[in-house]
Image 1 (cartoon, protein in one colour):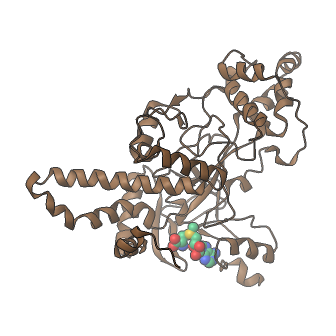
Image 2 (tube, rainbow, N blue to C red; image 1 turned 90 degrees about the vertical axis):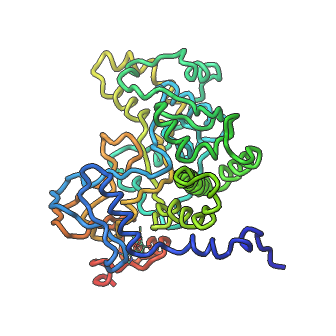
Image 3 (spheres, rainbow, N blue to C red; image 1 turned 135 degrees about the horizontal axis):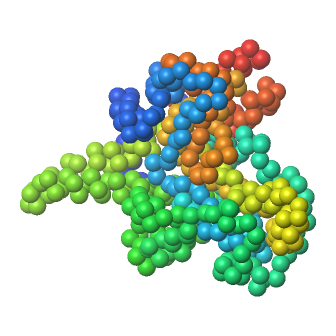
Length: 415
Ligand SMILES: C[S@@+](CC[C@H](N)C(=O)[O-])C[C@H]1O[C@@H](n2cnc3c(N)ncnc32)[C@H](O)[C@@H]1O
């Protein structure tokens, strides 16, 4: 017997309306507003291209010029926070629990204190680019085979408690850890402003602490555990839904405040339009992107390695046991999944004119797009979702995972 969710049955027309993309005029207005709110944004989003929406240069760009730093409308900024010692301590702590993996960070907020239960799966869906694949300049240690030499538990604890200070670590200062004000001990931030923004955006409904506004924190805990054990895309989906609900509630409150209390019944006519409006940032077709933030630990150990003698030998005497304990993971990047509204409008080309690229100075989780060649005003900006130098068949196979067959300038020629 087919199991039908009672909500699916009861709200079938509303669900169908939510799944319908907004009309082109509304999509255009949405992007016009979004671009106007981004200071110095030199793009246009047009919907009349060969592949639907696309991003077009609004000025001439030179080779190597920064085109865009895209921000997430909801979600989080990925940043390493706390101290270098805390980062090492947490990483060793999770390593000891057997939880360490290629995913260096949690799925939460602007943090990362290396809470390693986020398992993002980049193989499914419509993720736009994997910035890691462009990040060849950095030595992410996945390929190397450094055997780990574990440290005693007490040392790991002392690192996390701030009782151990490593030489030159003050040169790699990180924003202090601000815990979630809801008391969940799951989300950590780089500032109170960031914590508040997150709370108001979605976290108040997803927090498992005592101040949570979730309907049932017990159910929420089960959900989070399930997502952590399977795929953190569920967490991102929950954030999208919480974000929509909170946006809906805000506009409903504004609307109600402009009516007399006894005419509140007029709301019946507004539920759906308000919900559709609140949902718009998602329904205009944001695609998820995988993003990577380079580890400050890698920078630290490289810095020690580059010190002149005898400082290098002196510092190494202290730092080497930590490097040995971390093994390959000394350079583990922080990986996560995010929504970038502008980057997700960029179409793919196997002969792209721009690139999603993490530069040395990019220390947060914004999406950075850099021109690979001069781009003229009006020209479409394209990026490669995959390694574009691969042979034709391999490129097609990879792009099939993204759900389309590539029709860029290069592919038809090569086929
Ligand atoms: C991240 S979206 C880019 C924005 C998209 N054009 C839209 O309208 O939302 C990726 C989708 O755009 C289309 N697309 C992008 N580049 C393409 C290409 N080179 N060849 C064919 N389709 C492409 C595919 O449908 C793909 O799933």
